[in-house]
Amino acid sequence: MEAVQTEKAPQAIGPYSQAVRAGGLVFVSGQIPLTPEGAVVEGDIRQQAERVMENLKAILEAAGSGLDRVVQTTCFLADMEDFPGFNEVYARYFSPPYPARATVAVKALPRGVRVEVACVALAE
Picture 1 (cartoon, rainbow, N blue to C red):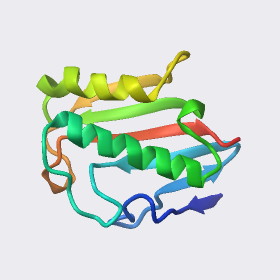
Picture 2 (tube, helix red, strand yellow):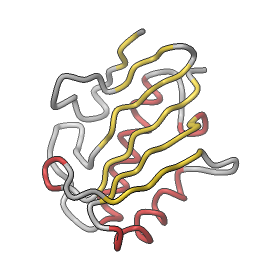
Picture 3 (cartoon, rainbow, N blue to C red):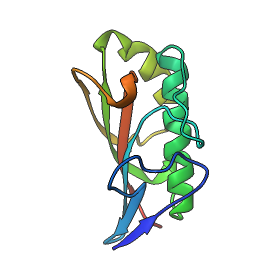
């Protein structure tokens, strides 16, 4: 198992790695809309989702993978009313065959954000 770390995405704010490479896969920890400097991106779901996807992209690239290698995502929304806006941004980052996905509504997310996304990708 090997930890993946990049300065192009926010640093972990707890006892976890940005991502871990193991068994030919990259497991990316849930990303919330933080800038690489750690500031929360204010705004609507589209603005927050854009930052989340850019964080995932940066971490995957640091791991030698990419969004085109993602096989599964888990998406958390603080409000299911945000699903259409989130889905609009999400769709711009992936192309067929799309990754498998679960999207769930949660009571709250860290730092009061609207969205968090984790993913699993092929390592190479």
